[in-house]
Image (cartoon, rainbow, N blue to C red; front, top):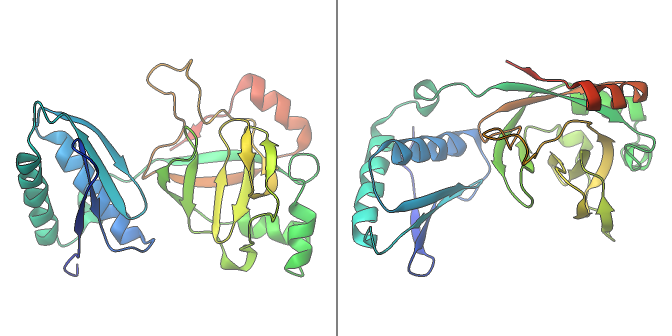
Length: 241
C-alpha cells in the first residue's frame, strides 16, 4: 500500500476531520473503515461519534472529557498502523451482500425511458447494466439511510435533472452522474429515477436495525415485476448473505 497523504481539519472546538486523498476508491474506503474500526475498538472516553464519508472521517468528541491533543495522538497512532498494514482488505471482515428488489420503469421509474434514449439504449439494456453488477456502500448520508454506492457502469452515467422534483417517493432508485442510490424516505431530489424498491431502508421502529444498509456492505439490485411490489412490501424480502 502506498504511503497515505492525510490532512487534519479542525471543525470548531468539538470535532476534527481527517481528510484522506480526495478520490473515490475502494482502497481509500478500506483505510477509512479500518481507521473507524480501530478508533471505536479503543477505550477512548470522550469520543461521541464517527462520521465516515467517501474521503474523510469526522470525529466528534467532548472537549470536557478528551483534549484535542490527546485525540490527535490516538489518530496518529492508528494512521501509523494503517501505514504498516500491507492489505487493509485482508484485515477487515467482508461486508454483507444485500439483495435489493427493484421494479424498474413505469410509475416506479419515470425517467428510465428518457435516460435509456439519451444513451441510445433500450430500457431493458439499462436495467441489465444497472442490475448486472455488485455495488459497494461507501457511506450513508443526505437523509437517514441514503446509500452512496460505487461501481455503476459508466455507460449509464447520467446528469441530475435540471429541475429537481419537490417530492421523490421513498424507495426510489436513481442515477446522478456516475453514482446510483436509493431514497430512504419521501424527500426532494434531482436524481434520475429508474425504479423503486418496496424495502424500507430506514425504519425507526426497528430497534437496533433502523438502517437496512451499512457502510462496507455490498449490494445487488434484483429486478422484480410490478405485481410483486406490494407483496414484498407486506411480507418482506431479506436476502442478506
